[in-house]
Image (cartoon, rainbow, N blue to C red; front, side):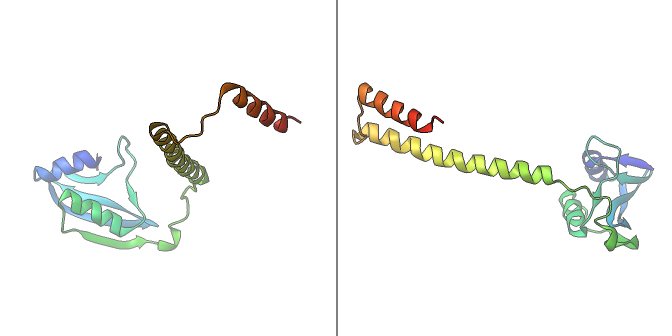
Length: 148
């Protein structure tokens, strides 16, 4: 059995090397198997030799359609949807990382708004002007309020 990543699979299809394609259910997921002119081949993950698995037939169908394959068979003989979550890693670290990224993006939008408003105020002359002595007093008072 040959192993083809998505680029090789697409090239093989474009050159007429793929005779038929099947989505084969195994456990809780599906994988793509193709009959090629050189024998059977399986779709692998990019930069890997592991089979690319699809938990959802629709996602596999979309990928195959993007390649140009509009006709394929589906084998559900060994498909067990109740096993879909078995062995599937949870990624709470990714959820936390995405939450932090969204918060940072929201902060950047807020900060850009503040900076833009300040720049407009400087251009229009509407910003409050504080001389250095008054600013030093304000700063000293804020630092004193923070001190334990």
